[in-house]
Amino acid sequence: ETWSEAKDITDFEESFKGSKKAAATAESTAAATWFYTDKYRKQQGPVAESVIAKLMQTKELTEDSLVWKEGMGEWKAVKLLPDLAKKVKELLARTEEGKQEDSEAASSTAPKTAQQKKKKKKRKKKWKTFENTPHVYVQGFPKDVTAKEIQEHFKKAGIIATDISGRPRIKIYKDKQGTPKGDGLVTYMKVESVPLAIQFVDQTEIRPGFKLTVQKAEFQQKGEKFIEKKHKKADIKFKRFQQSTALDWDEDGVKEIKGFRIVILKHMFTPLEAKPDRDKFFDELKEEVGAEIEKKCGEIEKFTVFENNPDGVIAIKFQNGSSAHKCIETMDGRFFGQRKIECFYFDGKTNYKVGASEEEERERAKEYEKWLMAEQQEEPAGEKEKEQPMASASQK
Image (cartoon, rainbow, N blue to C red; front, side, top):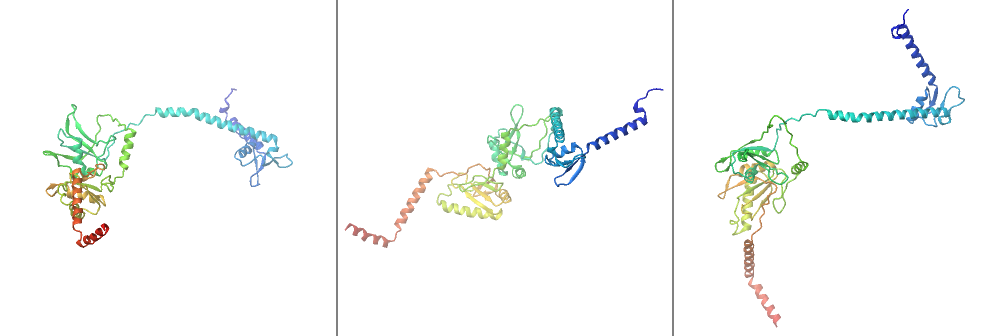
């Protein structure tokens, strides 16, 4: 006969399992000896002391709840049974210790999780292609072109964006030696200006002999590795401010605009033309120009003439953007009184209001004095005669 391991003897393993199960059943049966009344005063049970402890933990039972088991003469409150109360307290204390151990274990594993997260490979950022951007790429600039010159030529298509220092966002590309190459980038405030720039500025001359080619800007990654451009918080805030700024104009002249509803017309008159009779001249100008533009382009909300501006500036605010667009299409480059008109969107900041000169003020004062004298000379003779006796009477 030889010795064998218990696991190799089938009958022994089965009998062992049966004995273990029977022992567990007997233990649970022995433990489940308590009856209790729930909050509806209904009898429940039998249950083990651990269940009583859990019910007290969840506030379903209290120290005043009635319990009973075989051998007791009557139902009693938990607090009146010292042995049960003691065991319940011990079970509750063990539960709290278990929770504390679990939280400590969780806190000890937390740093590892954080470290594991740190160890995770960062996702490589890739170059993104954006379809709708407010940039136009321009070719054909003179070598000595300036940002101001470019701004003046391109503002007819909309408001050109500015950086945080207030400079227009116009980039003139240069070679390694710093010499302008003849191309550049113009950034507008709104994406809608891009097709307008292509429509109004493409194939126009910024100077005689320098015809421009304007197209939607497309950007490509430089080199094999993508380097993300970091934006300062101040730049981001400024960009948001620009986008959210509501532009309009006040009674004293152009202040700001909202959207693309205000256009500027230059060379509509000269202050010299208005000298003989200013009021009459500007009233007729408003009536003539306003009626024609409203008929061809759309309803005008406000019509402002900057009477003392040497460039003969008029600002027109339309009811909608489509009318403003049509006005630029109709009026820009057209001749009025043998002068070539410039028509473009208001940039939101230029102040076209110019005060009258000292000489003009003096002339106005003289004209007013002449007018007063003329009024006095035209007084009715009868009234003067009536005043004479009154004067002589007072002398008497």
